[in-house]
Length: 379
Image (cartoon, rainbow, N blue to C red; front, top):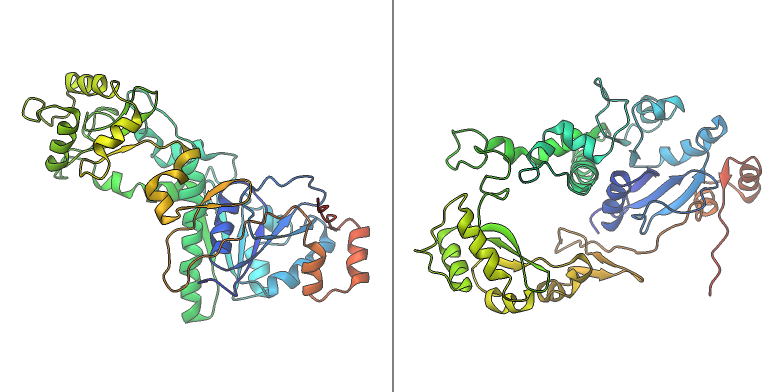
């Protein structure tokens, strides 16, 4: 695996931080998650293959323990607001002195400085400030589920930053601090939106109000349509040759129904026709054709779709189905582990590896600095 041998310390958080750590772990890195002591359940949901050390890093007595970990670590993932890690003497100025090769990845909503840097927020707030949210929806503004900010602009962009820092460290031998944040990450993801706005771009992609443009609902040939059984088909017939095949599949003559933007009567006609067949029946019409018409596959059925099943795009992770890591590397493919840790599960194991003996570890436990979760019963 591409990241085999790298040691990552991930402070427990929600969504973007855990996803970043999961990406690194899927590709071979060893990830230790720092959990709060006496946490009764795992709220991570993306902890697969990680190990858990439950330690009260708010106690000064924890610093020598953590210092041993950081001295030998390659990467640290900090999911807190600016200033939190410094409050406990765990900021980059302290830890990068201990370990000049450390890559200190700071993953926040608004960034390390600026008027909003220390205020609370969630995905919807970050993509709102980035400008991306203003483009989403039809006539009415509609926020999506938290993929754009948390996972794409946050966790994935942070993982990219870590890989770039690792590459630079290969040349310089030195680590660095990464300021990854969901406002700028989401904005960067939307670079194409910025580049295609205005009259200078050859295609008038965003010249009309939201919901009336080519890709946001204004076109009957870039649209979703409900089928007879309450499911949906997705149409992306942008090019003329694909549009012709789309019209033929509906039993319409493209000369009678030209490819024009904002043609409500044609959209209405298409909607009426799609309601005459089930999704499965429409798949028989459009599958394996260059019509750019595909079924909208429900999340719980995606692994069963013939294409996904052929490529093994989803994996069985015990009691659930999950996507396979992407992209696929021919020489060093990812090998995900689907065992989720529970908080404190590996505390003793990790401390023993760090050089502490049984008596020292027991004293940490008795002083409530470290928590060791009991092993789960084997049923």
